[in-house]
Length: 491
Image (cartoon, rainbow, N blue to C red):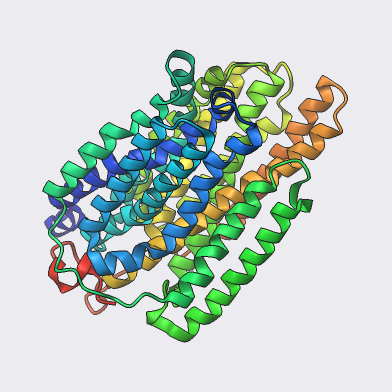
């Protein structure tokens, strides 16, 4: 290997310090949702309310995310990336402490909304800060590290939640966030580059009025469709239809306002971003949809505890850990197309045995299957997250982060909703243990179908990244001055 090539693949130590800083703070938000999801029955009992009411602990958080995510780009342009990151972490910290002290279901729901606002700002900002720091080089290697909690959260969260509920009071589910938030704020103050002066940027108010309620409606409708009645429920169908209509109106509005829109949807003309967003949507379905089915399979069909179900999912996380590093390196050299195609094929192979799993399927076989499945997920997600930012200007990165985050978030909600509806309907018709096993098998076949769609769409991804001296990377390198605009954006 030539010295030039060696130098081009080196990553500035400052980039790794930025990655480590956002990773520490981001861990709190990415683990929190799945930890709380396993505790709803405990919370309903201890706070003396119904499960239907306590569901708003997760729904309120999800809807707050939907409001906050769209304004992350604008807020960064005004405040700068460092300030916004620290404010978001502080909001999440306050929400976590208050949630741990909640005295009723209503107070807990309100405090979770505060958490959700902080989390909604943090999730797209994580990618933005890292991509703007690394520039156009070695994105795959860096994203293999920074995106790790997004995949491990749904896998390890239930284990941690189960351990807390088995041995401690439920309030510890929120206290565990505090060290991550405090350390994250301190590291951000020390490590992240200084922002320029606060600079007012006009907020696209009409865009916000269309996009935020639209995203909330879609997420709320999909969340409610997982309950009995599915999409036929009024509280599922109407929010979903209104949300889709508002988002369509936002796209029309944003196309007219161009760069002045809340989120510049014209970036979707950039094929790497458009194709990666579509496949991130499908990978969200594959990951989060199946993560709904797997714990239910272990608990409802096999009779395991919440903690044991979480422990049985660990092989999937180990498989993901085993492949992410190599996937990141290969992504920087061979591009996304064949890597993502291979990853979806591995996920398909790892999901196929689940469509035949019954009441007495060997646990060792299931754990090996999940190990393979996790390996495929690790191969898929890293190149997709890196691909979405390939060739973008520094000022375009915040909007691209919002687009990819929404694709993943809505994909996860869509997959969970669709598979929940299928599973609920099949279970309702089941009259024996064998029929119950068949209900889960039917749902897993749908998950396989979504994965197969990912295999086919992967063929349309851009191939190996190419660059000539006449065509330099469009992304501004890490050394670019942060004073050009707050958060490195000049929009």
